[in-house]
Length: 107
Image 1 (tube, one colour):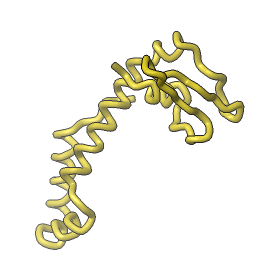
Image 2 (image 1 turned 120 degrees about the horizontal axis):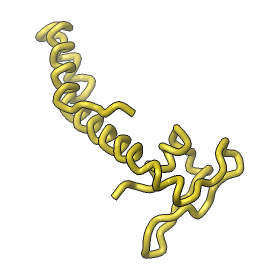
Image 3 (image 1 turned 180 degrees about the vertical axis):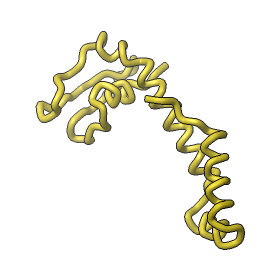
């Protein structure tokens, strides 16, 4: 099931600040406990959020792809070592193969 937070991100087109949106769960499903008046859009209805399920799923998959990529890239130090030992072109090829292995969906 798609995360409520990611539906909100899809609705707003950005990640809200912690002071702008507060989610809560009282043992059932998550819900919006607070929505700041400072946000450009009004608090969405459940129907509006449900309509964004597909976009939220794409965000979730892309977040996982980025996490997988970062894990395979390794630390900055290991990437510099790779470049030093094998060269910049080899590093670019390696990065591209990792991106191909963990593709992001178009948003």
